[in-house]
Image (cartoon, rainbow, N blue to C red; front, side, top):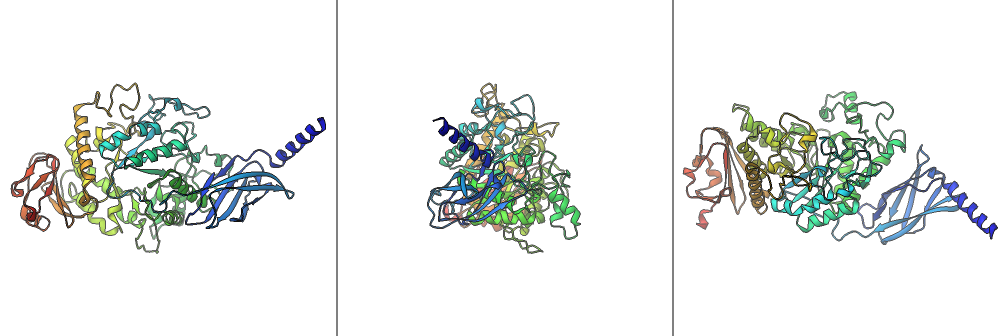
Length: 620
């Protein structure tokens, strides 16, 4: 008996000595059958794992290539999943001296019906941008997690405040009631950083939701619960950089996994260099390869193993969490070639998904060059459907706060939309007044409620897909500071001990309630107005600080007039707008519910607007 125990012990010791430590990571952990592209790259990570020879025991799964890198702790397996493969598991076997010493059971799942044809967010939607750490704390038990150094401290603007995914689930009724139909969450993946981890932009595990937000299953539950209410979930993804505490950085697969791996160099942030025909190569290189900040190492997407990893990770999350959209952070920083591969591979797998890229510039020529369908000078073919409309965002606050002049004031709104000719699809741009990286819109318009309403009306009724930052509806502001921790301050009522509650109205000022009620009415009206979603836009040169435009299709015409003048009412010149009015002279004011009997006598009060649903003369 003693001899048998000894033999068993020696065998166990031998196997583990051969393998070293247990397999620490297999990424992706599982995959699906029936994908458009049958090829799959599997990363295997474990101590000295490259000493072993892998194989698979399923004839419908072809192991086409085994890649070893300079780091013996990695293996990359190139698999091809045959069309007739079935859902279930197969074994990846690891051999030493022709003996199997370890095996891993890999799972292939069945895709949800209609997964490939899923429809993404579109013009009928209104996006609600949420910083989850600052919205609502649905589970105080996960506020502090052992092994994660950044602890909850609501007194610290840059600290973690405890908001989580459960908090968003708990308030889906509020989001739905307000008229929002899509949710964009700032990143929720693990950020194992020592401080300022709350914002989520320093990923340390691309396949794991940060436990202080919840877990993967809870994120999937949020998606399901949202969809049940007709609300789409948009994931914020970051292929350009990771956090400095990512396990890759501690033990990189290759010596070129990260740009400037041993010699920190910051990006110059000059995004124009990618399109500038005169740009120096050194400037282009520093832009694309320099680090965003010191705590965010810049990933080298020219490495084919890393490029494949990042693309697969994006597909994995869409499939796993039933996503209906992606917001791609710092889109140009990853480089033109990789973003072309990434966007085209995503759209190959999900042709009706919507993806919006962040290109922060006031130059529409640059933004348009990233959009699918654009003919560029160097024949660059992007597959990216949508972009954030930063030029229009910059025009909104400036138009509303600048003195009227030849090139300033309301003409800036007109001029921004006049540039739509450069875009392949301007109607698929995301239009917004603010987001998580800039001053609150109420602050931008000098805390003037009337100007605030003009900006909200414009973003809700112009072409494109409107997006609003959480708390915009209650006039959140950041006076005298541009600290992001203040800009992303807590939503009142998201914590049990909050004295004020914007979800219920408790303790909220009448001014904030007015703004909230105004947005709720406007967005719920927009929800069912197809002419606002997809109708043509015709606008007229501003006069006397008044900007008038129409949304129209064969069935309906809506007139929107924004009067910025602080002293004088604007009088509608019916004759000037006849090409859109077409003799219609009456309608209903959406904002007040009042009938308008005679547009010739319509006056718009100072710093106010009208939205008129015109009555067709044939219907009268």
